Length: 602
Image (cartoon, rainbow, N blue to C red; front, side, top):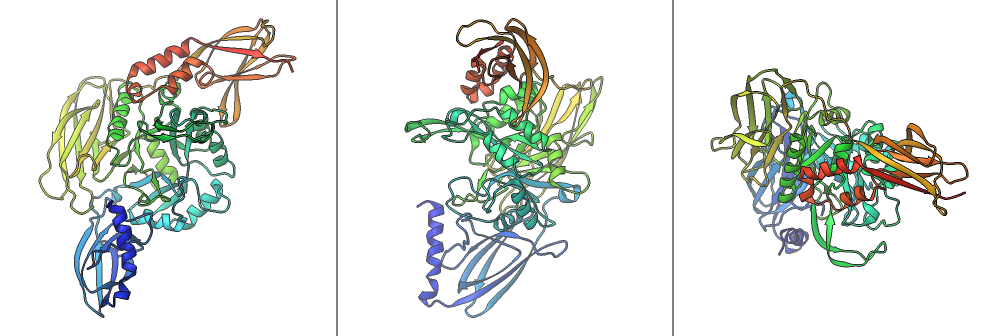
């Protein structure tokens, strides 16, 4: 029997225990911080003498969440209690004896595993769903806030759909402020753009999340309108980079998520699509190669998702290394994609991002730290890297070879039974030095020096007891020979041809080059096509809008309306994303683009 189902049956069985006239006792537990003695929200796994695990919500079947104090009536006999609070608190396990008619009083003091909090590091998860779409379980903002605090998260961004009467971004942000506490700040966001071309699950442009965007009554509606979800075959396609521009206009930072995820499954029966028993279902960031060359139009990339997605995570790291090695300094992020409306999937922070913030922590400060790469990602262990005293996101420049010193500090996750099994220092994606920590659950610290000529990026990586499920990875410290300048956004050389739809005769017209900020065009410049033809050099993200007297205006996109570019994107698979020739081919297609405008009178 699957574990989750067994736990549900145990939970149901526990409700019948009073009818068995068994003798019972009471367990009263307080959980406090070791330093200040303040009450600490936490996650509780409580197994009674009948082997029943206490559960309160089907969204979380590994126990229940507690605000720092609880009282339970239990059958007399042995019981086992495990208290955890994320990765940076050392969990406690206690074997108890519940005596008939008596109250067992217990105070548990949780202490931090590392000095991270005092050094200005805060952890967050910015890709979770209150309702993902399945809607099997309904939770509210109060429950999500308790779950975040119980998992030791200091920040949580709550994505759609929201269980409130009028689910606008401003209403969601209001609810987030209401349930936020000094130790945990909640904010609104969306998994957006989340874009399937014509609603076809095999042709995904990519999914993103964002942090720090200002709320308004219309932004969520606009971002959702710009995305075609499953089966939305009639929706006019838009590019992800036009949503990125809208998020940036609202002050947000956007990350591509699960960029290398796909699977085979049954799909169809809606939106005019037939049922297919074995469909290639994609969550791939297929538009990412184009968006990288065109900007990059996004700010960060998830390299770590749920730990059971071993191949997704391995390929995500390969993709990140590829971008870094070609000069695109894209910061790494991580997110859990937790879905509170599904059974036992309502655990935020299973993977999380730690950000280093100067001054008062805030969602805006976390967004800025993510954009600058002042962060590390983890599914358990904790890890700090400094090169010559500078942390992730820093750049050190030297004109000649220079002795460099890396300092690494690592700690195992506070979850019971965890320990460090390896610490690595990497240069340009290759392991430069491996360290083996001593047995035990303590921290690890080491320095390593080498002579560096420059042109390198340095990261650290460490592993817990299980290398597949317990890993932490820092963002890079960059070592440059000379001041680094980012690659210029690719521009398109496009041949524009304008003619009458019926006769084919060339038509003189005005060509306006616009970029879309969401659904709002921003005029860049205009050019006359006096005899129905003109060659232009424009941003890769541009649209060309043509107007001519007596004709209906017509707008076409360099991305969506150049067949070779669109087809190349929609056919992208993991292998192509991890091959730099895909990016060079996109660059070549942009250099030889053509847009035809068959104008209709009107």
